[in-house]
Length: 587
Ligand code: TTP
Ligand code: MG
Image (tube, rainbow, N blue to C red; front, side, top):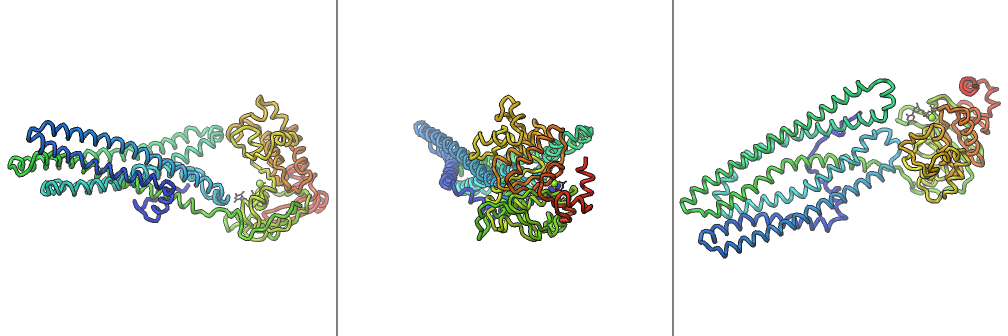
């Protein structure tokens, strides 16, 4: 699998990406403005504390003014109260905005995914798309809640402190700043190291995720082939390397943060030493020195946090790059420009010189032409890999032909609205997909126009009613994920009921190759005949009984139509169909 994409880490700030991210904030602009405003007020209040201390010491304590001291203490408390309220509102507000933006982005990704052409999903593994919608979106949330806005606030506080310090006493201020090069150098080192190990963490968790996914969905095979030990060993390798990456990050944090502590203590020592001398000289007041001590503490904290935030920003930029790349993948055009209305249903299908390839090089279908008249039932036969399933995915436009045209009642399907086209066609696929939910939901698939009576009628028609009735909750019987509590035959009958409930004008059926017992076989072939009744049908047949009910047969061989005719005609020809018949159907 390709993890390259997860590895890319670029700039910590990219104005093009930022502009697009800001669009997601737009609906919440008044709240964002409020949050930024509160942040600035909080920053100013932070500056007030040490200043009040200075006044308390120099103006009141030094002159024994108890009344003034009380007053200043009350102001200090009041300010603490205000700070508390502001912090609360600010934190809640930022988190609220963050959660809502994430909510919107997830919704956008999901709708977008649903509109992408199937060829996209052939190229992108499930795990990657899941990561986009969950982890990557979460990284963006980190940026919103503790990245970009907080940096803004931090810088504001820093500048404020610098101005106040210089105004209070510029010599003492310069002395405090002498440790800055040390801090900047340490932060630089830390940032570089931690960035590396964060990248390792992300890469390794992605590996664990995809390995897990593969092992869980392939559990049957793992257990049958006694692969448990081998797969466990491999997992432990991945698990261990993931742990190591985390420990590495923790080591860097453990080195960096205490180092910064020591450097800021150094600054504190300088302030006390120089300030102490000046106090003794009577060239500086005690209040100023105490205020400096407090300011210097507030000064180093944002600097320390900046390197952490830099990493958050960088990860967020990488995530948003990936999210936007996904969102920028062109959607399938559901409504073509100058689309044509779908004429009233007759049910005619025509392929005109259709050539098709999944990857652009190997043609799976080659110059295929045929016409099915309204109401005709046509069977397609051919060896495995001949291109039968591919043929029918083109009709519903799950894929687009590379060359040629497909016409529905005389209209080029590429000029139709995709939804209109699909509404007209009932499709039963080779692999039946069951959604978690009850039986009724799985037949109706959320279409409220289909009444419960119609669901039951469809089920009765395709012989599914009997087994459904046996369940204690009937149509409300809960199906587990991917229908694991249904037999293969039951799943097929259910998918027939699904197709029939939608009352399609045209039926496309890809018969499953799996064999079932004679009784179920009988139920299924009976159901298929009922499905084909009164409608144009194109059936990929693996059963003799299905073929016998067809008006004529198309023989597909390596992507080409090689023979066509009725069962009897083809047998007489003694060609590919004859051989297939001998091998596959003449049991
Ligand atoms: P299919 O059209 O799936 O062949 P089939 O339906 O005739 O076979 P079966 O009877 O086993 O159901 O495949 C034709 C070729 O296209 C085959 O070489 C595999 C390739 N293919 C892809 O490359 N990508 C796809 O998504 C599919 C479905 C097939
Ligand atoms: Mg097939």
